[in-house]
Image (cartoon, rainbow, N blue to C red):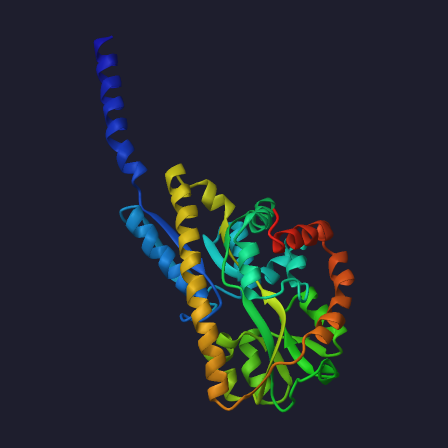
Length: 331
């Protein structure tokens, strides 16, 4: 009996001695995105990595892969869902392929302006939209920068809605964007982003819809002649994390992840505001003609796409109503 108790005591002692070491085991995270290291995505992830290291005493190490090193956005989403990678920053429109209610975010002129979109998405309505991702194996940690998408073209100026007729324009590869531009009379042409520069340069497409900062950062400013502030979409971005990976984290690390994600996103929002302003100034400085057309006719025409887009969103109309309330300052 004495031997039995002695062995048991030794076992308990070893268990207690190794428990703190196990609890402090280093946690590695791998995050990916498709944009450059100058993008709001990368700013958010760099800040996230710094804060996670400092607030966990280097218990968590975050590796960030930029420029599509881990694949395009659809592949990133699948890798997050299956737990192959820890997390990613992706466009909200890319999530339409998984969560159909996200088609609401591809409605043209859903928001009045960029600031309003950010305000709504950083509030309770944004949190409810993020919550929809859990049933698909993802944790939505926050909405990031919102990209105001305008029309950059080579050869044709866009001063009125009629100028869009027959325009072969590259659009995001989502049903919502394709339908919005189809209704406007263009020839919407989904195409991988990596192929786009040469396609525009060689006349395969006439135009693309893109934010000012990306127009400069990805060198499209070198080949376009016109930039029209049509503001058709306020394109959303989302910081997603694998639910399986998140659930496997200790509770204290889960709380830190959520806290640090919020702070990192705020840092990237400020960065995006600055580079967006600088991008538009750089476009003007390159002698690209910048048009500011009357948007009322564009809105009237583009909104004809809403019914078709919402057909594929099961709770779309209820979400639109909630967004409209949030825009007016309601909850």
